[in-house]
Length: 397
Image (cartoon, rainbow, N blue to C red; front, side):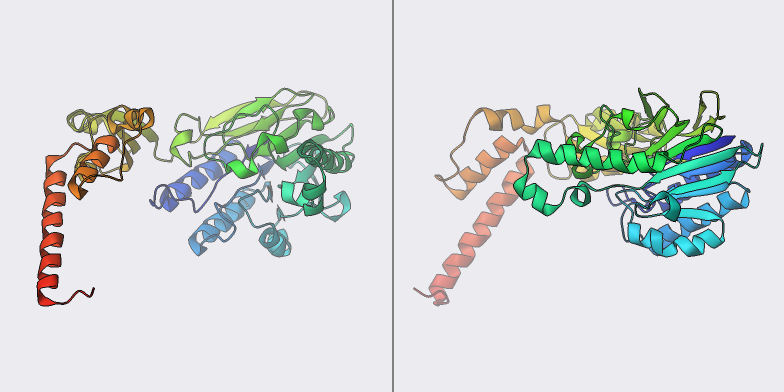
C-alpha cells in the first residue's frame, strides 16, 4: 500500500506580522495534488495542523476544506493533534469528521476507543493498522506533585516511561500480516530542530529514543520537529518536516512530503516530494547601496536583512524602500557597538543630558548628526518651557 506522510502545517501562522494564508492555501493545494498524482491509499498528518489552539475562521476553513479534498480522492485521512493544536476541539469535531470518513484524534485513547485505526488499502486490499499518539505534554505526563517531590532526572524518566507504556499498548495491536504504522507528535532524542518550534515543548529532557517503536512497525510517521529527517531505529522513524518554512531559522530546510510504499514483509520505500508553492525566506547582508544593487535578484522572497553600516535615523525606512519584502531589519553586530558595550562600562549617571545622550548613542552604535541635533533642539525646547513656567509662576515649590 502507498501513503503520504505530512505534518506541521501551522495554518494561520504569520511571519513578522505578514499574513501568509494565501501561501498556506497554495501549499495545501499542492499537497492535495501530490496525493492525487501518486494515488495514495492514505494521508497521515502528524500534528500541528494549526498555528495556535484558537485558530481563525479562515484557518479552520482552509484545514477543513483540505481534509475534505483529500478524502474526496478516495483515500483514508488520519490527523492527530500536535502541541499547537487544541486537542479538545479535535475530539469535539471527531464524530462529525468521522461521518465524512476522516479520522481526527485530539487526546490519547486506548486501542479499542480510537487509539488504533484499521482499514484495507484501496489499491491492493492490504490490511493496515495505524497506532495514534497525539502530543503528550510533559505537564500532563509529570504531575505537579511529582515536580515538587521528584528530582529532574526522575521526572524525565517518568515522561519516557509513560510514552513507552502508551506505545506498548497501541503497538501491541500490530499483526504479522498487516502493514503496521505509527503516528506520533513528539520530540525524539537525537532529532534536529527545524528552527521554528516552541522550545518549551521541544526540550530534549522530555524526549524519547527512536527505539520506543518496535521492529514490527513498518513506518513511524512523526511530527513536531520541522526538519525532514530519519532517526536510526529498528524500523523507519521519520519526521516529514514542515511543508512551509515558518520562520527564518528554517529558510534552508527542504520543504517536502513523504510518499511511502510499504508491505507487511518488505522495508518501506520512502520518496521525498518537494513542496514549492510557498515564498522562500532569505537572509541578506550588505550596506544600503549593496542591498539596493542586489534588490532585483531577490524576487518575491521574504527577507531578513542585516545592514552593514551604523544605525542612523531613517535607515530602516530606507531599507524598506529598496527591499519591500524585508520583514526584519537589523544592524550587523559589527556595526552596532555591542562589542564595545560589553567590553567596558560607561557612566550614565553624571554629565549633562546631551553628554549622556551622546554616550548612549556611542555605545548603541548610532552615528547620526541629525539625531544629535534633534535631541539638542528638544533639550532647548524643554529648558525654555521650564524657564517660562517659572517666570509665570506655574511651577510650585
